[in-house]
Length: 101
Image (cartoon, rainbow, N blue to C red; front, top):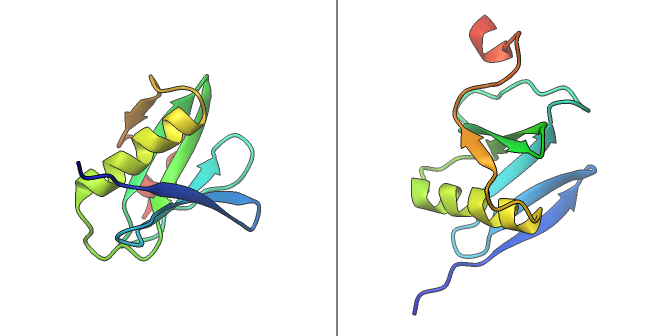
């Protein structure tokens, strides 16, 4: 049976999800507690953690399979003990910095 492994690396007080096999790194941001300005050429997803919105942004996206990124989101939701986390591509903030670029 094939197994994928994710782990957290705490960097600059933020959680970074790391996929052990591919090296994919995904930084997490609390949209309610810190500024988040999406970087170009990265993939961005958003998740509702018990009413607090989080942003997820790849770090140095190199075209890893989307299934690895999806697996990272599922793993993190389980890590937060909230496997039913709503994950979306739409930025939930009323003034969306992605619209301004």
